[in-house]
Length: 556
Image (cartoon, rainbow, N blue to C red; front, side, top):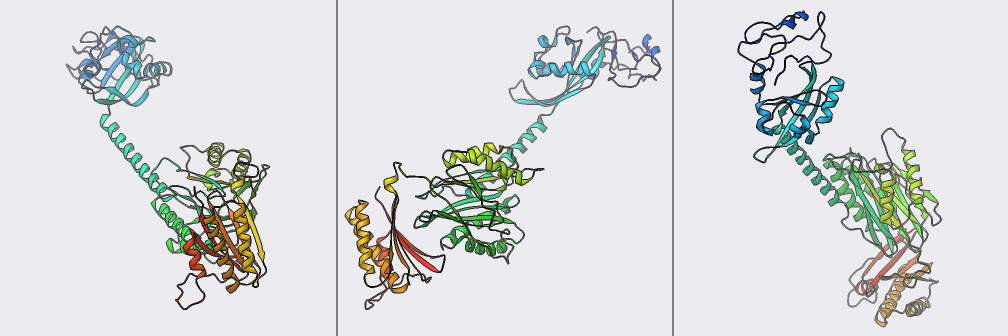
């Protein structure tokens, strides 16, 4: 190393007097002492007269070599545009091997190229400013990973612009940061697992609907959200579809969400109208946590009526796309969020004709910071109008169309369901409806039995199932004749998986199964139906009446 001059002044350092190119004679083979110092013999360099700044002599016997070689940090010095190697200290040589000054860095210091430092050194030469890269992994001699932070600083080497590469060992810090990242990753995985465990593990698949749902956690932190959805089969072909959102993030929000979802399933079993379910849920939400805000939309699909009855507690509107592609939104009726109390919710009705598709969603799908949520809703309507395919395909397309990525900062839940149009399709013969209006009187029961027998025969049911169906229809009609009031109606429905028998009348008193004493002449009808059928139930109907139904599972 034959430097004749060295200036460690960074570009931009003010000069005093005229030139700022003070130099010193080199010792130990040309490595110069510190700027402004003296040589080992105590005499100042001749050029020092050009700089009027006061000179500070270096300690006697201490050279730049001694200083740099004694550092635990890695130091290398290159000069010129081609990065000619001028010097490497002992620590650098211990990590990357000894080097001979005079060669080019890309050849004699290939590790700089592997670490991506050569372009950085070019920038330092052009700008005259230091550059730093943090925590670069360097293979150690013993095979373990070592991390260094590299700083490239400009300097003058023998009248030539150069770069000093200074590398500090940050292995402990890098390993600590990696442990922290791993801990955060594990916490996030646990949080997402908790959230997903509170959601349905497998959606119920109704006979008359095709259903799919998607949940995507928001953000990269460990906080979980309170978005949820559910599909609940109510019997007699009816299905409840639910979506909700507990505001905020964290385990508390997820815990409230889990309690609300469980409560909704319990209330749904009562087969109440949507607004009554929300009334019950509203009271429960205030008891769970009065400070937690939650929204919910509850809808019930009835294939016999071809409609969707819905109610909302502060939730975003449901969207329905007709077979012709027209999209409708349910703006009303909407009440305040759950837990506010003192509000009477109401239900609304929308047609859900064969071939129609509907979507329920949470605000994470359409809400963006700094943007109006109405614009997001319009974007969703436009994307939904053009999204075709199965419910799962539609979920995926909406996620992409609305720009939801893994870095999205809010949870997103989507529930899509379709009412398939089976007319003319391969399933057309598996789905049938038949109904008979009954005026009452002694002829009602015989008429019901004859009607049921004729319909089930035309549907080519096995004799045993046909007999059970006729018996169930007869018992339900007899119960309605004794305890109900006109008008009465018998309805038979066949799907690809079950036979449904339902009787409606004008009385709203729901039947209860009870044990009849041996001497009783009545009271066995519902017990008989419950014994022979796969399931049975009852509910109140709009207008003050009731419906009593039972189901038979069809052979596979």
